[in-house]
Image 1 (spheres, protein in one colour):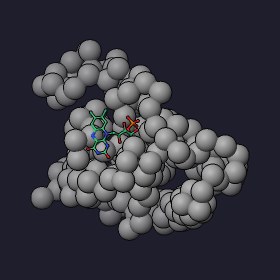
Image 2 (cartoon, protein in one colour):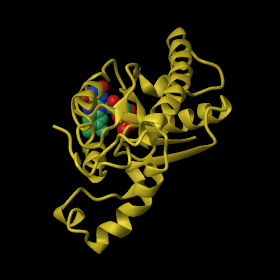
Image 3 (tube, helix red, strand yellow):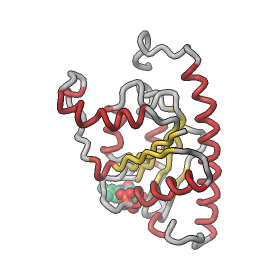
Image 4 (cartoon, helix red, strand yellow):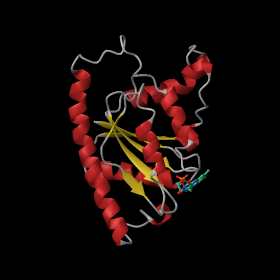
Length: 202
Ligand SMILES: Cc1cc2nc3c(=O)[nH]c(=O)nc-3n(C[C@H](O)[C@H](O)[C@H](O)COP(=O)(O)O)c2cc1C
């Protein structure tokens, strides 16, 4: 199994990438996956979608194909979505435009909302409402919200009862993610998926 982690922050040294590294570590420590691919949007220098993407421009082949291949070979995803102005950051929305109906399709994803304060739910609502129609990403019913993110994952041991709960939930949701990955791989292998006749959803 291979898990893709997308860190949606625009910022270098973000809380999102700190959480992504924590998730990488837990996936490995809990022996849930053999391989992890982490896409840090703050450093990946992926431009915003333009029409050349659909016209097969050479520029886009060199920019996107390596990420596309990595994502296509993942079985499950963790989408880390910091709240920016009560929204999903544009760099993360951009990924949903760049993905075809292959990379994320019929694969489970755990959403992790992130806030420096007490917020963090808007990106979850936004992701659950949009972006899945053509990509066919399948979000788990459960999601994480990491509030007061700067206080989290700083030491070996949790520093508060809230962090103890956050860590326990995260481990549990990652275990659930693995089981969804196994289950949805049978959907993809079933022969029923027909993206030629139905490239886009309604
Ligand atoms: C452009 C921008 C807008 C933000 N808007 C919100 C917001 O609406 N709600 C919120 O809780 N935090 C907001 N924050 C603070 C983030 O929660 C904070 O940066 C947190 O560490 C997660 O983002 P990061 O992964 O970029 O570090 C915003 C931060 C930035 C840079």
